[in-house]
Image (cartoon, rainbow, N blue to C red):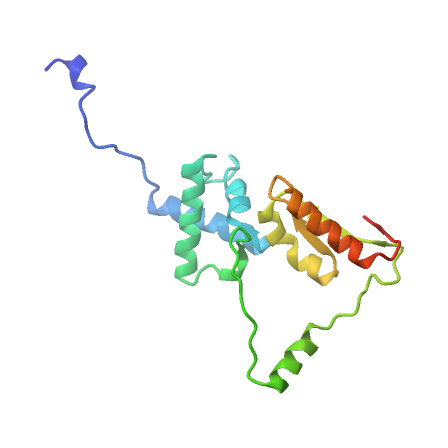
Length: 178
């Protein structure tokens, strides 16, 4: 076999791995970003980790995204990263409310009451955003301010737009929606 043909033989791939020190640095960077502002989506966190000014940046590729995701899973499982610091609005559960009795039902319903803080405003406010991952970040603020949130996911389907219009029409109080 010549040197020219040896180059094309099958051989195991050898991918470079982060050293334990580099993994520790990446974990520290992730924790620093999340301590500063949480909850965040893993995708947003990944974009923050691609900053070349960081001591241990990740490449802006699927491989870099997977690296950040794996570190988050590992830190969550060890208790280092609180589960509530990351949000995932891409998956949703559908739940059935059940009650142990009438008193339990009344207690639950009383907790749902919220006065309409926008009732006397000249307009109604809504927040529309392109990304569902951003929706997970701003949802608490929207809930606190009693503002409807509509995450479009990059493309507003006609069904989604129709449902939003139905909500606007339901109020039908003559106020402009902004």
